[in-house]
Length: 250
Image 1 (spheres, rainbow, N blue to C red):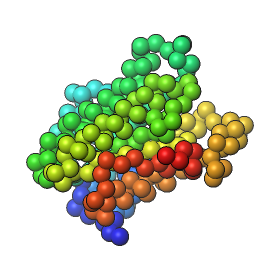
Image 2 (spheres, helix red, strand yellow):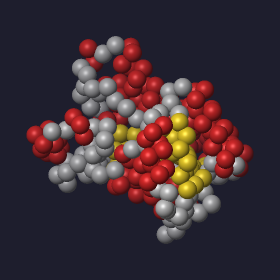
Image 3 (cartoon, rainbow, N blue to C red):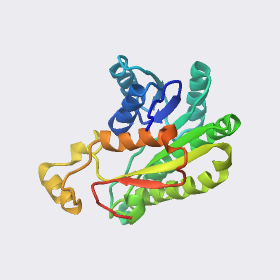
Image 4 (cartoon, rainbow, N blue to C red):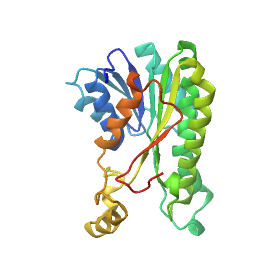
């Protein structure tokens, strides 16, 4: 199989750390130019520096995906520098951990704003560009919380489920234009976002729900993203693939 991404341009949101950084790294290893979009500009710049010795190129651009105006500016800047975008990875994510009865509308908007509207903003800003070029790959990073539901993450689960439905609907709309839309669904993965909250005791309890008896590593879902972004996956669209150690088997 050919995972060569030379001459391809990718936008990776949330590329400043965790799974997003690993996706950017593997894309650069495959020869792509990667726009590393992150709400924390220092994190995006750090990723770009870390990848500077790889065959591809990483360019950091600050963007808060919850703000459509910032997304428009980020995509415009990316297109000005590169002239095109072939691949979009909607990876930026965040979750509020609370009993639903204790949440507020502000909490809901954090979950929906980053996970759902962030995906809508970025995809909307690039989809017509991809349709015009008759080529594009959109990979949305979701969560098994959206497949099976997670206690104390009700609106996060709802947002991720919504992204899965959106992805399948959009795949039907744009397939005739040579555009593939897929999701990669994560189980608990050792990222800088969650590890400060995972004590050894909590980890030992968590892994009991995983047949492989461990949490995931960021490079594991990233490897699947590279495949889905490559032309080896040209006949795959509208699918949700779990990388979850067997947590859910749907």
